[in-house]
Image 1 (tube, rainbow, N blue to C red):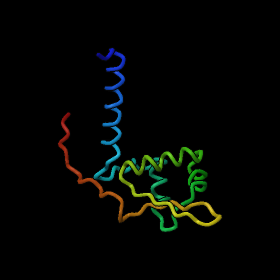
Image 2: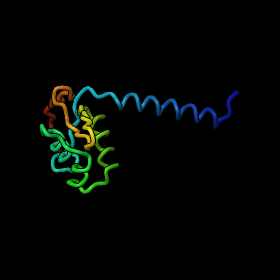
Image 3: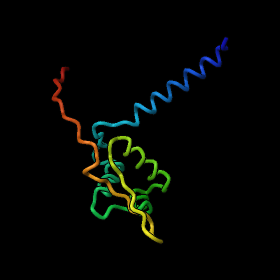
Length: 113
């Protein structure tokens, strides 16, 4: 027989696994709000030339680990971010538009006051 603590721990572990697997699959693109630093990062990565981690961090005023974590978040939102390794030079990051999830269809909702 399990103790209450063991049962609670099993439930928490199972729930967190389910949440992680459900949230990591994106079928439609969830773009950041206009004017945010995330939107600026998407713009930088969408250019044909892409951006290095250092350049993106410098432009946004973020530490490199924050920029890297934000790119991970963008991947979870449906962006296909690819890294191009270069010999002796920093890697270039780009958004591959062909592999990025499509934008969701907009639905006009009636607003009632």
